[in-house]
Image (tube, rainbow, N blue to C red):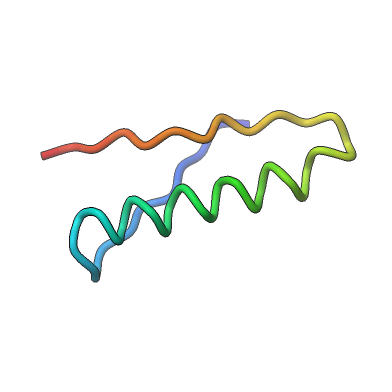
Length: 45
């Protein structure tokens, strides 16, 4: 599966922190099923 999280509303740093936190939470949720989540910010300017 391929996907992403897009955010807007705070400043760039806040949006990045919220997106990374969401990916980390997803990674923790899927870890017992041995599914991997890449937690990485890819900032487009």
